[in-house]
Image (tube, rainbow, N blue to C red; front, top):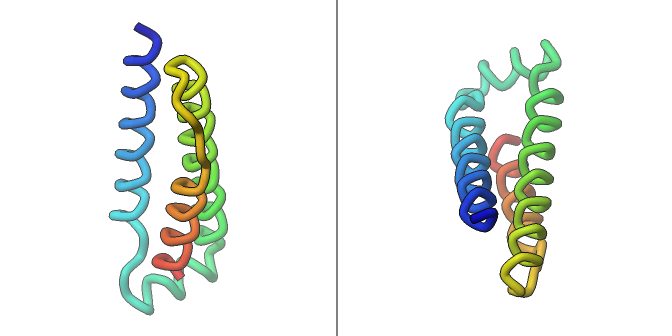
Length: 86
């Protein structure tokens, strides 16, 4: 039962990351305002926190199911999202 709860938490966290990505400023002007106001830094901290939570849940899921855990996918996701928002 806990495995299903963890999977639901992981799904929600990926949804939150998608929302983060959707709400990120798109135009150069929006990005400039975001950087000057300090919101960009907070957004990066929030993103790193979401990815860290995904990693924690994936580790717990791997322990419960006996599957191997590799953080490479989450690390690559974080790097890609940061590069996309830059």
